[in-house]
Every structure is written in C-alpha cells, then in structure tokens.
Amino acid sequence: MPSSKKDLSLEFAGKKKQLAIVRLTRGAKRNALSDGLVAALRDTFQNLPGTVRAAVLTGDGEHFCAGLDLSELKERDAAEGLHHSRGWHVALDAIQFGPVPVVAALHGAVVGGGLELAASSHIRVADATTFYALPEGSRGIFVGGGGAVRIPKLIGVARMTDMMLTGRVYNAEDGERLGFAQYLVPAGSAFDKALELAERIAGNAPLTNYALMHALPRIAEQPADHGLMTEALISAIAQAAPEAKQRVRDFLSGKAGTKVKKA
Ligand code: 1HE
Image (cartoon, helix red, strand yellow):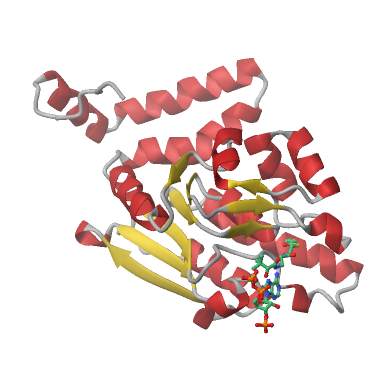
C-alpha cells in the first residue's frame, strides 16, 4: 500500500534534532486512518533518521484520531480484511518496537483504531478534552489494529469487553485513572507536556530506552524464571555500556544533577 504523505507530517525539534514530531494532518476527517495513512505511519516510524532519540505522536484539529476510515470498509471481503488487519499490525509494531520511545499527545476522540494507535505508543499524555471509546461493537466489526492485544494490557479484558459490548465512553479523568494515559493535563497542553517528556527520554542512555521498549514487554509475558533470566541478560548488557559507567561515575562524583527528588 503506498503511503499518503499529505496526511502525515514529520518535523524535528530539540538539540541536534533528537526529537521527531509525527503529526496526523487529516483533521477535516478527524484524522481517520485510511490505508494510505496507516502506510505513512509505517514508513515514517520504520525510517526515522538515526539522529532521533524520542518521538511525539500528535493529531491536528479537535480530535487525536477517529479510528479506521470507515469509508474504505464497505467493499472488503474476508481475505482482504485479514491482510488489512495484518497491515495495521506491521505499522503499529513499527511504533511499539521501533527505534525510539514514542509519546502520544491525546486530545478529543481517541476511538476505535485511534485508541489502538495510541496504545502502540509508550507513554500517553491526555488533555482534559480526551475521551476513549471502541465503537467497533456498534459498527458490527472488531478491533483489528492490535487492540485485542494491547488494550487489555492497559485497562484489563473486562473493561475492554464492556466498552465494546455497551459502547461505553470514558472521559479523560477516568481514562487516566484506569490506565489509558499515564498523564492528565489541562486542555490544550498535551503536546507541550509530551514534548517535555520526549526531551527527557532523549537524554537517557539509548540502551536503557531500548531495553524498556524491547525487553520489558517481552519479559512481562514470559514465565517468571524465563523473565528473570532475560532481565539478568539485558541488565548485564545495559550496565556494561561505557555510557552507563560514565553516568554512574558522574552521580558518585556529584556531577550528574540527577539525584531523585521527592514527588
Ligand atoms: C470519518 C470518520 C471515520 C469522522 N471514518 N470518516 N470510528 C468511529 O466509529 C468513529 C466515527 N467518528 C465519530 O464518531 C465522530 O466523527 C467523532 C466523535 C470522532 C468526531 O465528531 P465531529 O462531530 O467532530 O465530526 P464529524 O462531523 O462526525 O466528522 C467530520 C468528518 O470526518 C465527516 O466527513 P464530512 O465529509 O461529512 O465532513 C465524517 O464523515 C468524517 N469522519 N470519523 C471516515 N472513522 C483496525 S480496525 C479499527 C476499527 C475502527 O476503528 S472502528 C471505529 C471507527
């Protein structure tokens, strides 16, 4: 599927252009995810320049994302539906298991495939206008963008089942309490907060960020004794990196300025 470049923009910010800002620019259609836009997400996250250390994912207009572009759903048969869903999996895996942590800045509707997209990021910052829903149930369809795997990890199977069976909508406050978002901020400030967090993340040792993105979710799925072994291996690799040694030396000599402060 060729990517629809006009529906997505990529900009860079921060020192040495370490931050990528990926923006859905299809506000007139509430950033509904057409096949071309899903392909653009895939291509963008698969090809981030090596200078990038963290990314922010945001959407133009009143809403983060209205989910699947329903106008493209009408004519698909079962085989096409299967390949369509697998295409989303590749694109959203490129976000979750890509080169850098992704902070999603949420506002307005985060619904259907928009929630699946948000769930593929590593940190979600929601402003007070955010609401979450899975209208697939009322459209006679099912999640197909990895939501069945990722959303229960955020809010549990029971809540997701309820959302799809009853059309329940969660507001921003409840969403933060339940685990959709890790941060709740005033209306209009999600992007700024996401950028601030991305800057902080970009300052981490790359291997620590890599371990958090690629090892932690897999460790959490492993039986405990396998998980402990994987943890030992990745922690051994991370602590052996010259950057880790330098950071520990800086702390011990009082130079780091990274003492933990009371929240
Ligand atoms: C769309 C879509 C869309 C808006 N596909 N065109 N997702 C849904 O079921 C959610 C459907 N959308 C909505 O419920 C509402 O649009 C919103 C609550 C998100 C926003 O409401 P509002 O009043 O701001 O906008 P609107 O007037 O409804 O929509 C503006 C335009 O965007 C309008 O087109 P226009 O040509 O008449 O201006 C809408 O048709 C269009 N639009 N949402 C196509 N989703 C991998 S499987 C994932 C499965 C799913 O995601 S299912 C859930 C799909």
